[in-house]
Image (cartoon, rainbow, N blue to C red; front, side, top):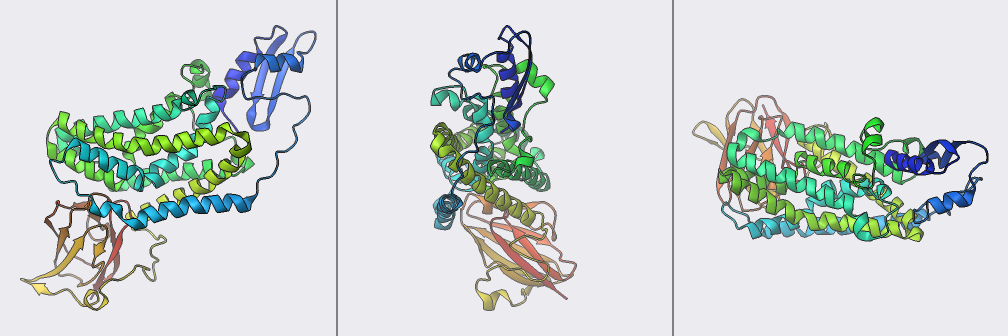
Length: 441
């Protein structure tokens, strides 16, 4: 455990003892070093000073906590991840259609759906990975509501950034869109941090000193019961607008089409409000488990495994987006399910001097494999069946720059010229749904 602001607050409190001249708290080593005059403070004086706080004091090292059964940790982790994949497999989003001009209530419902599906792996995983640090910052509080303060500020940061983004998108439109590459690299960076925090939860001692926090000299100035556990969660929440999510892209697209700053802001506001219940539920669950010492250790291990899985899951999706080697494919062979095999493997027909390929999009691509000739222009007709989510746009970085934004319940046409023979992957902006365009001589 390591929490700079917690250490500073402990040091300030210890200095209230009249005989103590200097104090240095090192939570990662479970040590408190003091310099005193005359007689050393008694253990009882420390216990009284920190009564109500979750700290224990002893002149000897505490015995190691009882070992957690890893079998039970893996069992509970498997249940949580199984539920996640079950929800993903149910494809509930396929019945959701959010066209231009949808009510704000429909956008709130879209946010609810996002919070319990794609946001669960991306934003929910981030919340879970940081919940232990946030809980430590308010560990002295008694009520659950007070312990939820960091999570409220995290969601407040999201609400503000999404509202501002909606306003700017409605006003300036596509000029403000964050590039797919930047979002992918940003997500990978966040996922690496999640890996470190996940390993901390699993007890890797060499990483215990790592913490997302302001510089110590700044923390010393602002460490107080009023600011502790608020500033950093708010900042992290504010920056989540940069993390790519298929549903977020759908909401951003509607904000652009609104061509109105107030309307664009309301679109993004109601969407992000819809995502908040799921994220607050993740926060409340973590707080409740950390409150019970008998369960806190096991929950920390389970959360660590889930965070590690989601971090690797997110990295793989972004490698797909960047068209780099990933679990979905390898340089030698793309392990992608082929649908309608006989038709997919035939060369695209040539119409008016251009190759024609046609695809329907709902919660997946059909067909998801095409074969075209190099050097001849391709006309790609994409029929959008009305799904709002990851498949609301398509990217194929190795074939053309940018991405194709699909039109609701309409056909979108993309033209490009494949130059070099090979197998090229295309996907939705999150890398969750993929397909192949095979270019031959």
